[in-house]
Image 1 (cartoon, helix red, strand yellow):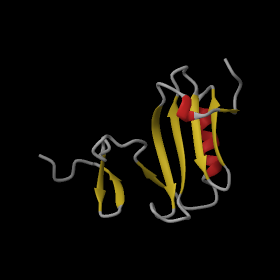
Image 2 (cartoon, one colour; image 1 turned 180 degrees about the vertical axis):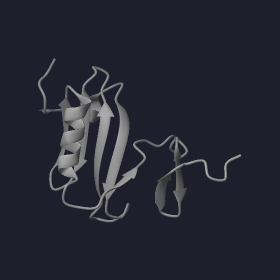
Image 3 (cartoon, rainbow, N blue to C red; image 1 turned 60 degrees about the vertical axis):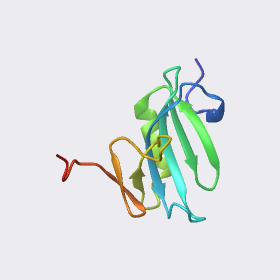
Image 4 (cartoon, rainbow, N blue to C red; image 1 turned 90 degrees about the horizontal axis):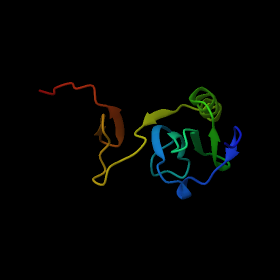
Amino acid sequence: MAGDGDQVQPWLLSGLRRVRRWQHGHTSGSDSRHVTLGLMADGRWLVEHTDIRVGSHAYRSRERAEQEAANHMRACDWQEVPAALDANGHAEGWVRRGNTWMRDEGIGAG
């Protein structure tokens, strides 16, 4: 298996499952940046980031990948957003209120 921090091309990976995602800036703004944590089919963890340089790197452990993701989010305020949307633009466990995604806590459900 490849080493920690190896650069990968996620668009070429089959079986990639994005688990968590964070955003800084307005969704449609030119300053919008993202950091995504995902699990690759071979068991390694992926960190994708769009900041000054765009990159995607693989790590053997989730802990190491989470540390790397946190390094990309040090300088600004970040909001967690859905890691993936379905074909209808919905995300399991999330609700959209205006232009903001929030975790669905089941308030008012029933």
